[in-house]
Image (cartoon, rainbow, N blue to C red; front, side):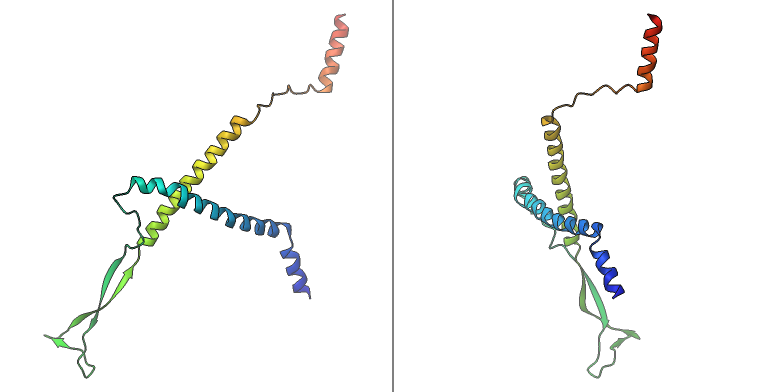
Length: 153
């Protein structure tokens, strides 16, 4: 029972609940940002790059792998004491999706930066400037001023 009680206290702690709310809000915000990039940022960018297809997902590097060629009886074929190597398969290094993820990240980061910049600019423009109040004079200073004024009279 002690373990269950300890887990319940941990799970219901305020920080964990705040984090859970943050994850849910973050997931919803991710959808908003992804939609903004896909539907608002990318169409003008595609117009600018209409001649070039800006999609790196298909980029890959095929690295041929060699294996010794075998005789029908299972032994290695040899020529001049060296095994005969044959192309067997390819190791494929898919670097295109990685590059596409970097480009997507940069576009999303720029889009979020621009939106936040616009929000902050609008916020400062529409907020009424708060008049700076003069700091309140401490009571001991006021008392000393009264004494000074009384002595002057």
